Amino acid sequence: MESTTYPQCRIVPIQMLKAENAEKFLDGLSYIAGIRRVLVHGPGYQKDGIENPCVPCTRSLPSSTLVTVSKQPMLMHVLMGDVIVEAADEQVIEKVAMYCDEFFDDIAYQILLGKFMKTKASQSDYVRPGVAMDTDLIGLYDTKQSIFPYILPDENICTCET
Image (cartoon, rainbow, N blue to C red; front, side):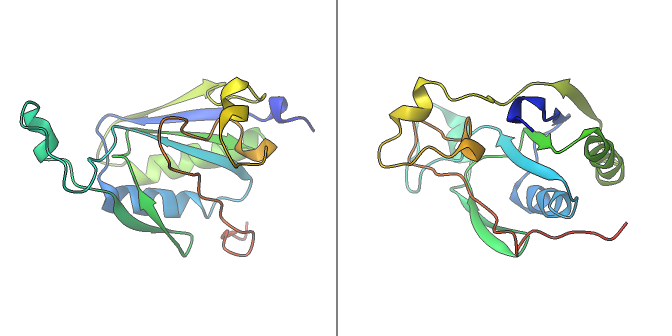
C-alpha cells in the first residue's frame, strides 16, 4: 500500500496544551493500534536563557520540557496546538475520534479529515545534512531547527486488546 493512501486527520483543541496535558494526550494516543505517524504543531518554547525584552510574552514561555510518551522520554519543543495523525485505515481514525471525545471532555476540539502531511519527498527533505532519506519521516523534519523527529521502537509502542 502506498503512503498516499493512508488517511490523515488533524486534531485541533480550542486551547493549547502545556507539556503535562500534552504528555497525557500523546501517551494515550500511543495506545491506539494502527497509527503510523504523529506530528505535533504549536508555538515553540524559548531557548534556554534567552528572553526578548521587546516581546513580553517570551517571558511566559518555558524552555523545552521532558515528557514521556509510550515509556520513552523525549523533549517537547512546542506547546501543543494541534496534532496531525496518519493512520493505517479509516477505522483507526474512528478510534482516534472516540479517544478525543474521552480526553477533551471539558474543552472543545475539532477533528478535520484530509491531507496534512507530505506523502512524497520534496527538496527540503533532501537538504537535511547527514540524514538518510527515510520514507516514514517525509515531512516531519524541521528544516530551520536542529530538532529531529522521535521514533518509537516497535517494542515501546503500546497496543490495546480489542
